[in-house]
Amino acid sequence: MKQKAKLLFFTYQEKESPYVLLGRRISKEGEEYWWIPGGGVEAGEELFQAAARELTEELIPTKHISDTVNKYQEVAITPPSIQYTTGNSENYIFFIQINNYKGILEDKIGIVDEFEELKWFNLNDIPQTMSREFIHLKDYLTKEKIEAFTQNFDYKRFF
Image: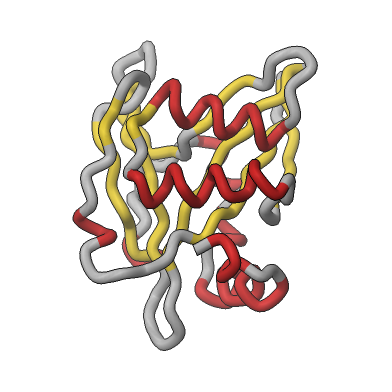
């Protein structure tokens, strides 16, 4: 069974609604949908390594995002994740908090391949046209779940 690894970037500050970074794709059939950067795991590759590699193959991340992902790799710590299985693959989504500073939602992230557009979405405004795999993730995209991730994992050391 194939393995896929993806990086879900989020911003969060107390008393504010979290934001998540999603990319708009167009399927082979011409349908538009929003989903998370990432892709297939290659033989001998660690899951988080694969997600980080896929990020640079699909996007030109900001220095802020690149530095955060690199810090995880340098200290060999894997961020919290969820796992789910679809018909043909095991999927892993790593939750990475990005320091929420003034202007982060306007930072320009370049696109190399697979996405038409990238955008930060308030959890209250997640698009209706999400990937069909969203069913596996939607319960984690609540303010309460994001708060739990931030309370149970020391994200601040990666800012």
